[in-house]
Image (cartoon, rainbow, N blue to C red; front, side, top):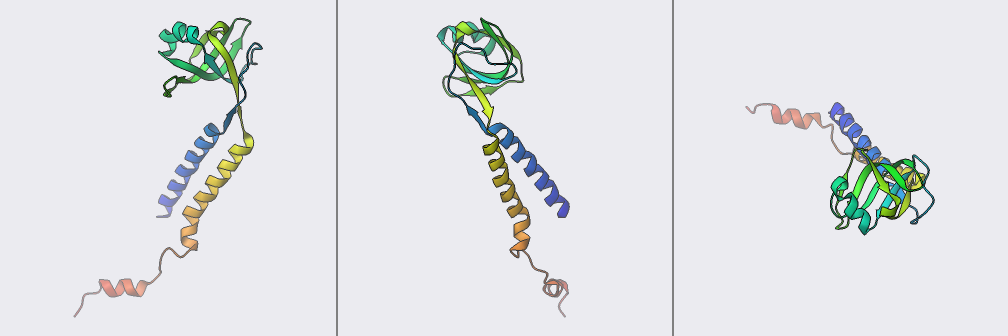
Length: 158
């Protein structure tokens, strides 16, 4: 029973860490012109021309390309794609494949920054919840040690 509880706690901690690391990004306002520094995490916002030109590589109706800037020149970005977002609200996760995107194909970009305060707060709240679930039950009296009642039921009657 204790081993099962430890395994469940470890699984829960891994799940919380995954959510905390992914979930607390904030997008800064849309920027144009100046290239973000590599390896900044950005979300490129495509225009109509960009959607049409990149449909064969990214898929149809892609509105945003999210990933890390590998390099940026005066006329193009090379981005390691982490996720694409379609205009209909769907999205797809990528594994860091590099794609070149001309700046003429974008409306601009949004820099995505990890919000350390929100991430720490989320991790703290979820960890406190996990502690309450796994430890709180025994603190609140979630069981009995009534061994007499158990032995009385298991003995045959005469």
